[in-house]
Image (cartoon, rainbow, N blue to C red; front, side, top):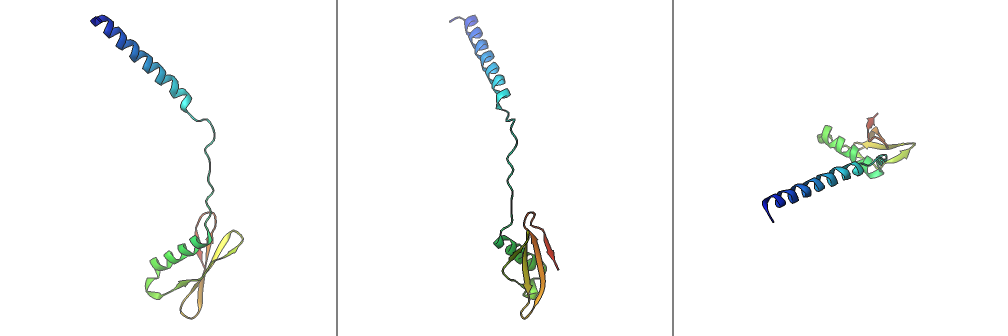
Length: 101
């Protein structure tokens, strides 16, 4: 092969490769809607959220989180000291937000 033939072959191969890659980019886009995963807080996760809140904010006072009960779309976790129930934590099942009363 001569130098001119080699340059023509390389330029043709490059042109074909670029055309193919640009053509396939147009088909690579997904036009469908993105899948949405609905996350819900489970019973154990609700209790663990309250436990971590108690450890972080009230570490030295030995509070305990009792097992969770579901009321509506919220998990209810009772917070107990050594002898009495002192508060109730409501954990939203959809968002994981904690409200203590």
